[in-house]
Structure formats: structure tokens, C-alpha cells
Image 1 (cartoon, rainbow over the protein chains, first blue to last red):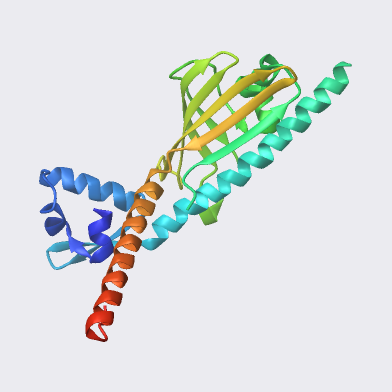
Image 2: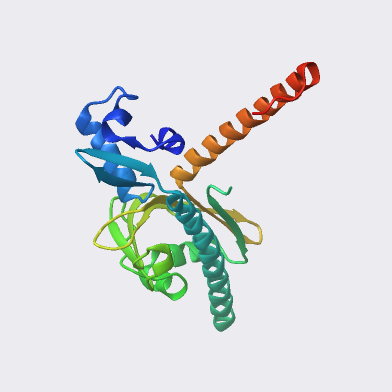
Length: 90
Length: 149
């Protein structure tokens, strides 16, 4: 779905035509992508148009960068903690 | 583009002591975050830290214990989002402890950033096609003069 939307914005109906899925199933997929921030949905007349949101992807990369640094600093903290503990015991 | 997180640390301590710091809620809070962890498979727990508005992160990690092999392996799901139980990050954290003569190697893998995988796969494909198109254009230019893609 994201690949199709990366080429052009599509209505939920025309998006569904590319998949062997029921209409409710397509709506569910779209809803998840929307909730995750990957796409935006706009009502034009009676149709719902889906557009790819690039920020959704940038955000995921930001999560990875954040947690990468997060774990590194936490592990260093654990290292210090274990080190101090073993000195106390001696 | 990076798709998962991997860290390896050596501690000059036996696996049993390192394990304690990974599985005892009070000890975990000393270096990681406040939590209500229990070493029981299927146990739902949370880590709590300060919210990060720029990440749309309310500061709560929703976790479920997935696997416990005492002193060897621990894994839990790691979900987060902007609040109201909305999840925008759905990942898995795996800890592995490997004993050696001098202590313990602790290996951390934080993975499951799956949408990134999809995107980089897609990027790879489009780049590949673009290169091929340029190759074709070069050949056409050589044979027939200027062609524009």
C-alpha cells in the first residue's frame, strides 16, 4: 500500500483494487497506516483520499536513533553500578 | 539506513549478578527506568520515563515478557506511542548473556522496526531501477544521440 501511495495519492476504493482483500480489511489496513502516521486521509466529496506522509518514516528513524543512544547510556550506567557494587563488597 | 539496534558490553562479573540487574525491578530501576517487571513469561509491565514530545512519546513503554532462560536469555516486547494507549512503535528487546572466564558478555538486540525495512527495501528497488534506466539511456545516447529520461 505504501509503495502504491509513494507514486500517487489514491482513494481507499482504488487502493483496495490492487489487493485481494475485502473492503473492511482494506479499511483496517488504511486505519493502521494512518494511526502510525505513515499516511494522511482527506475527505473530498464522497471519497476518502490517502496520501503518503514522509514524516512517518523520518519519525521511525528518529525512534531508532533515540533508543540506540538510550541503550548505550543505560548500559554505561549499569557498568558503573556493577563496578561500584563490587568495590563495596571487597 | 539502520534497521535495528545492537550493543555488546563486557562486565567483569558472573552472569548471575548481571542477570539480577536485568530481572529485579528494583535493581533495573537503578540503571534503566522505573518499572513493574516480573520474571514471568506473559507478564505485562511498563517502563516509565519522561515524555519526549518531539518523538510523540508519552514516556511509557508497554512491555510483555516473551522469553526467559535464567542467566542466559531474556526478551520482552517494547511498544510505545503518544498516549491514550495509542501505539506507534512496536518492537522487541532481546538480552543474551554469554559467560566467559573473566565475566559476562551482555548482548542487546532491539529490533522489529519493520516499517523501516519496508521503506529501505522500496528505496533499494527504486534506486536499482533508476540505475538501470540510466544505463539504458547511456546506451541509447551512444547509439542514437541524446535521450532524456
